[in-house]
Length: 106
Image (cartoon, rainbow, N blue to C red):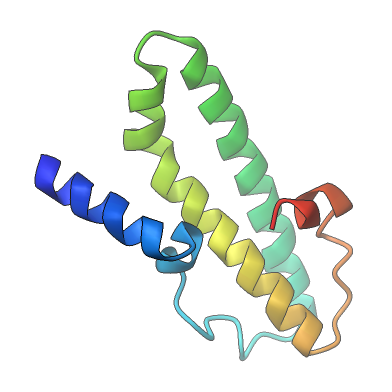
C-alpha cells in the first residue's frame, strides 16, 4: 500500500495531478448547452469537495481523511473543469459558469 502511494506521488510530481484523472477529449462531442450544464454541476461539486476538505482538516487526522476520501475526487473534478473550459473555449461557447476566481486557480 505504501509503495503504491509513493508511486502515485512520484507520478503526480511529473505532471499536473488533475490531468491524470480525466480522459483526453472527454467533452469533444458535447454541445455548448451540454458543456454549460456539465460545467455548472462540476463547479458545484468542486466547491462541495473543497468545503468537505476544509471541515476534515480541522479535526485530528484531517489530512489523512482528505488524502484518503477527498483528494482524488477533488483532483478529478479540477481536471474535468479544466477540460470543460478548454473545450468550451475551442468551440467558442459561453463560459459564464467559470468564475474569475476559479480561472485564477489554473
